Image 1 (cartoon, rainbow, N blue to C red):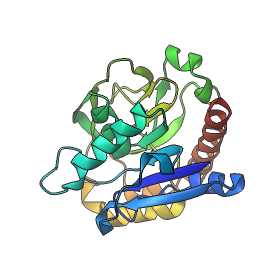
Image 2: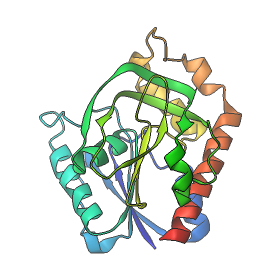
Image 3: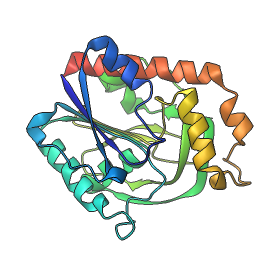
Image 4: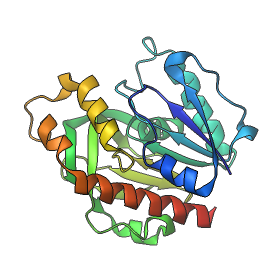
Length: 232
């Protein structure tokens, strides 16, 4: 299987997902937008993974590649690919499918629980998720209007739409399960200005002192990928 990753900044990488791809022996290729990389042909990959980043999906003037990336994601979905998005990547999927992304009521940064919905129990790839997993968040925007046909699988008190699935092969996670300790350190270092005094924003110390949560999320990420592989 061939997997392609869309990368927006050097400090938000696929993390523990690369452990899984290495174990499976799958080829992984990349588009690094900040380097000016070209996008591949749709025939060149089977799965598409869209990572996070500090930009907003509507900042086209500052990041002109966003429009082309959104169209590329839409093409991948139309072509029947498995598509996964995390944080910014999830929001780009939402926009590509016709949903709406706007500011969330509160920024959400740190380790917080999300609640899996009743619909999540019917999604085979998510059967290993506990009822309320503690996951890592770093976002100010969210998908406020889900695309037509999307199934909401996770929610929280501060963010009504934490994750959705489309056709059991497109998964948009507002949160992260793939982050390693190195990625978390890089996030805190590069986005320290966002760690403001707010109800759902944790300190750098709180963010970096949760090794058990990192391991639990990484394990859950691996189980999810394996389930998805079995289905597709």
